[in-house]
Every structure is written in structure tokens, then in C-alpha cells.
Amino acid sequence: MTATATAPTPAANTNLVHYELVRWHLAAAGISILLSMTAGFLYSLQFIGYYPFGGAALSPGHIRLIHTNFAAYGFLVNGFTAMTYYVIPRLTGFPVHSRKLGLLIFWVWQAILVSTLVGFLINKAQAIEWGETPTGFRPGTFELNYVPVDLLITVGALLLIVQYMVPLYRARKQRYYVTLWYFTAGYVWLALTYLMGNIIPEWVLPGAAGAAVTGLFIHDLVGLYVTPMGWGLMYFFVPLILNKPIWSHSLSVIGFWGLAFFYPLGGVHHFLISPIPDYVEFGAISTTIAIEVVVTTVVVNFFMTLKGNYSSLRTSIPIRWFYVGAIFYFITCLQCSFHTTWRFQKIIHFTDWVPGHAHMIMFGTFSFWIFGVVDWLWPRVTGRSWYSNSLRSWHFWLSTVGIASMFVTLTASGLVAGFMQRELNPWVDILDMSLPFWYTRTFTGGLMILGLLCGLYNMYKTARHDVPYVEEDNLSSGETDPAPAGA
Image (cartoon, rainbow, N blue to C red; front, side):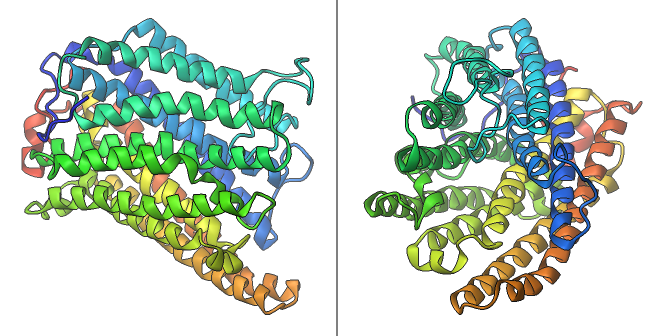
């Protein structure tokens, strides 16, 4: 495959895109992130002594599972799926394999999410971080005792591969733009990564060996699915909105192959200072540091593309989402290259530093990029102009202030707690020190939820709006689409 250095130009045939699939997946993504963030807010209340629920079903542990899994499999997967339904046909010139298959994937995927939710509430989760989705079998046997969600998710990933590989195969004689590289790899890696992380540790590799593979799953789900999908979207939408080519073809290729080479073996850094052999941990530390070099090439490419168009940060809200997310991305990846070393781990291991990092990368970066695409795409797939530009701005600023404040708060809390632990302070003193930080975290989470509600309400009102979307109205803002969307 070869990539071009030109900006992607959507195909002229608007019948290529199944807009109802785009709308439905975006709507499902919105419901999922609202559920996820509400669960996260409720979970934070236990740290400040105001958790509202009793009983096993709605215990904080179950609520946390809903928070993390619906962010991953509800919001991110639905969001990325919606956008690939838009992008791949326009880059290849061919529609996806089947609208009927798309409907099947959509409804089955939402059924999987509901089954996962119910499974968590009735204690059917498994003990794999970010892979708690019910396996469906009794431990150590092949006797079904619930819906085999793990296997269904793997099948769902394979169906998505079939759906998207058909237009890619039909366009095989074309020169693939780099976005298609990332999407192709991302969907293949998704199926392999999920199968590896949710089947092998439980059935084949117990103990430390299973933990090592689980670490690969946790990290590779982010690095080999979320990251290539996010980068691919940036490489498509940023040049499209700015109406100029990506700055460097070479850097886009380096970023792709660097990701493929270094990222797969970095996941063991989630289990540093553990029974996993030191040489395996050292390998994970080394590849994690190397990834920062790869990330730098990608971020430089994006910002050099913006050169000469800095005013678009003021005039285009999607560009604002993309580039603030890129800044957050560079910060968290630079942070990661330090905190995965053994010296840093002696301080920040098991502290608030870690959830601060995780929230910044998943919400401050990849969710921001999805929000940016939604902001640009929603009027085009509904055929209606945005209901309120003020709500668009409120969504951005509440989200930005909220996640930046949460990141700073949890990072500071983690450092203070880490040094207090090193000095052998009593645990109760560490808890007393952490309490103001935890109040602040809950407050910042509330800001983020308010921002999300602004965005979701705006989407709902826009879809029911009676003002049709006209592409020419957006020429001055740079938010243009060379081919008008046919809703």
C-alpha cells in the first residue's frame, strides 16, 4: 500500500454513504458516553463519602465496570464505526459491503452492550481489566451460564472487517491514502487483540504469564485499535477542513510503521514491579519510550499542517477539538514515557496519577477527536444546520476546562500520595490529604458531564431542526465538504 500526500477529497457520489448507519451509531455513541460518564461521576462519590446506592448490584465496583466498558465498547467503538462508514466509501469510491449487514452489526452490537450491562449487575464479569465483559462460561468449564459476550464481540469485530474490507479490496488498484492504512490495521488488530486478551489468559495462561498477556490486551486495545482509528480520522478530517494537504507524507508513513513495530509489546508496563520477569518489564519500558518518538512525528505533522491557518482555531470548532486533543495527546504520551520507568513507578504506583493519565488520553484526546468529527459531520448526516452555536462552544469549553483540571488535580494528588507512601506516612493521613483532591475531581467530572449534555441536547435539537444545512453557509469558517452530504 502507498499513501498520497494530498488532502483526501470525498467522492462525488453521495449515494456511497449509508447515512442512517452513521446517524444511528453516533446516537448510540452519545447514549453510551452519557451512561459511562454518569457512572464515573457516581463512582467518584464513594471517595468523598456520598455514594448514593446500597446493595450488591449497584456497588461501586459494578458502577466502575459500566464506566470503563461503556466508554470503550459503547462510545469509542460506535463512534469510530460511524465515522468509518463515512470515510472509507469516500476514500475508496465504493460503498461498504452491505447495508443489511450494517443493520445487523448495529443491533447486535447494542444487544452486546445491554448484555454486558446486565452481566455486570448480576456478577458475571471476569477479572480482566477492560476485559470484564462476561465470558458466558462457568470458570474452568465449557458450561454456559450467561451470554458469551466475549465471543460475540470477536465475531462483531470480524463482521466489521468484512464490511469494510470489501470496498478496500475493490479499490486495491488505487493508491491508498494513509487513513486507510490505519483503519485497515485497526480493525484487524481489534479482533486479534480482543481474542488474545479475553480468551488466552482465562483458558490457557494462568498466573504471571496470563497477567503479562492481559497487560498486552489493556495497552493494545488502546494502541492497536483506538490509536490507529483516531490518527486515521485526524489524517482525513484535518486536511479536509483546512482544505490543504497533510504536511509530510514521510512522517505519516513513519508514524504508521512505528506504531505497528513498537506498540504491541508495551502493555506489560501496566504490571511493573510484579512477578513478571524484569527483562520483560524492561522491554515494555523501552518500547513505551520509543512510542513517544513516533507520537512526536504525528503531532509535528498535524501542527505543521495547521501552519498558516491558525485563525481556524478561532473560526472552526472542529479544528479546535482536534488540536486541543493533539496537545493533550502529546502531554500524556510524554508523561507515559517517564512514568513507565521503574524510578517513577516507585512513587506513582497505585496512586491517582494513573487515573489522571488514563482520563486525559481517553477523554482529552480520543473523545475530543470524536467530538470534533461529530461537530463537523452531524449537520451533514442530518441535513440540518446546528441548532445552537453557543451550545457547541459550551460543550468544548466545559469539556476542556473539566478534563484539564481533573488531570492536574489527579496528577498532583498522585505525586503527594506517592511521596507520603515513600516516607511511610500512616495510611489515614494519606486519605485525609487526598480528600480535597477527590472533591475537586468530582467537581471537574460534573463540568465534563454538563458539557456533554450541551453537546447531546444540541445534536437532538439539530436533528429536529427545520433549518436545512447549506454547505455554502460554512465557506467562511473553513468547515466545508467538497461533496454535499445527501441525508
